Structures are given as C-alpha cells and as structure tokens.
Length: 258
Image 1 (cartoon, rainbow, N blue to C red):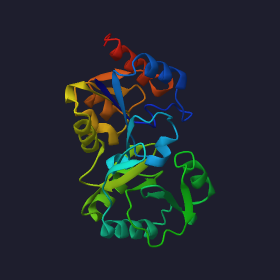
Image 2 (cartoon, one colour):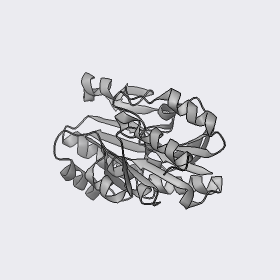
Image 3 (spheres, helix red, strand yellow):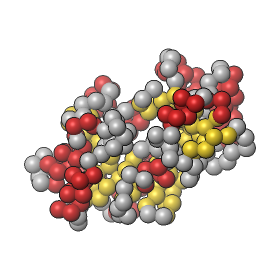
Image 4 (cartoon, rainbow, N blue to C red):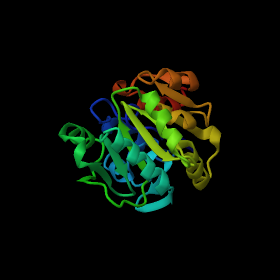
C-alpha cells in the first residue's frame, strides 16, 4: 500500500486553486486499493474537505496542528495563550492587521485588515469570520501576510514566542503554529494508524512548511514552481502545479514506472 502525502497550495492545487478532478477520479478508480491519500496543508480542515468528495482521506490541517478523517478529529495541538497575546500585541503595535486566526472549524480575520485582504483570504478560508478578535481560545494557527522583509518579521516573531514557531508558508505568508508539531509529526501519526512503512510514503511539496515532511522519505518530490530550499532537500523535481505534476507522478508510481 502506497501512501501519498500532498501539500495543497502550490502543489496539488494549480494557480486557479483547483485540480484535475477527472484525472484524480481515474486514479481512484483504477488503483482504489493500492494507495492512501494524506492531504497536509496550512489550511483548516473544514476548507480542505471542500476539495474532495471521498471519505477515505486523512486531512492534516494548520501545518499539523489538526489531524482528521471523515468527521473524526484524531489529534489537535493548540497555541499557547501567552504566545498568542505577545504576537497579537506586536502586530497591533506595528499596525499589521493582515492576518488570519484559525481554530478547529473556523477562521477569523480582523476588521481592520481591509477589504482587499479579506476578499483574498476568502479564497483560502471557506469559513472566514470577520470580527474584532476578542477572547479567542483553542487557536491552532495564525497566518500573517507580509509584503516587506519576511525574514526579519519571522525572526522577531520567533523571539517573542516560547512554545510556538513562525515559518515561511509561501505566497508572502508566515504561519505560526506550536513548536511540537509540523506536517512531518502529523504524517508519522497517520502512518502509524495505517500500519504503513516509511518506505511506502511519497511526499510532495513546494514551500518551507513542507521541508520536514520532505525529509521523512527518499520518495520526496519538489514542484518545479517550488522554492530553491525545497528543491535542494527533495530527492526529485517534478512538473509544476499548473502541469498536473502531482497526479502525473502519482500515476507513474502506481504503474511502477518511477
């Protein structure tokens, strides 16, 4: 049994935030009992589920903070309240309002973020709620969009956090999640549930928040549109997300041509 772990934005999804559903259905029909799919993303579980009609998919959301299958939440890891307060105070002092806060089933955006940012985020969060972000609990992830020096902001955020970590998640965004989790940690938990061996794992990614999971296996694939760091870590480079790179490679693997 092969296990495919795929990032979504910039990897499985094309630039129009879609994928070739007919091609995916073809693989599901022809190789139904030969593979499992793990969707590992920075997005929320509820948003990820909107892309698939199949039940037998494991979803890893918020960069590993939540693991789910069908209607069951298998595992969660919430951000520390002290870290949250420090980060939000820092952003407020810097007049940075372009961020989204995610809990298990919903995501929230600050009213002060502006219409353009809110409209853009609604493409990635089907459950986005606009409010003033007061008294929020059980936060799994904070995503910040930044147009300036991302490395400097990441360094500042990491200096503030005790039990959380800020990472570049691509598309001018920074994700803050708990230090104990990432996509790789969550994938290991799913592999254990499946009783699968790590040599049967095939991983696909394009951004820094995919690095840990790409290191899990020699069967690691960077997208042609991925960043240089990801390409240096992955063992293989495949066609871009706009060229059906993941599905083409999955089919080759299932046909034992790769």
